[in-house]
Amino acid sequence: ILATLLAAVGLYGVLAYTVAQRTREIGLRMALGAEPGRVRAMVLKQVGLITAIGGVIGLLAAFALSKIAGTMLFGLQGNDPVAMTAAAVLLGLVALAAGGIPAMKAARVDPMKALRYE
Picture 1 (cartoon, one colour):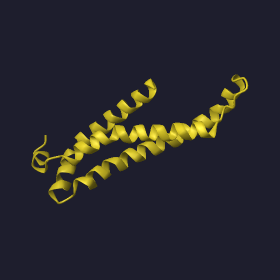
Picture 2: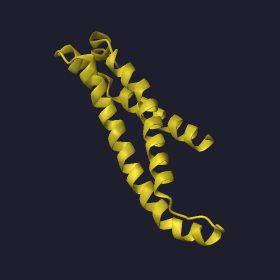
Picture 3: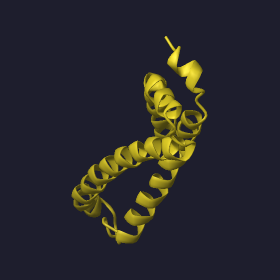
């Protein structure tokens, strides 16, 4: 649970920094008529991409290391597809929740303040 919490905080930090760096771009998009939902979707798309890449790498590493873990576990299987799928889904949901806060902030950017930013 602690590792998941730390991962969520780290992902939130990265996305909050990214949104802060892109404030002018987001403000310009909003000034040109982009709807808040589209801006939110833009940030959540980035979250999804980061999560998918990390998930694929994590699942490949987990399946590779499951053979080693299987030799250390007595009477248990090292690669349980149900457990791995449940963990991947849970971590994906946590990542989307962590990315939702910066996405909401990006959707509420005031175009005039963003264009004067920096």
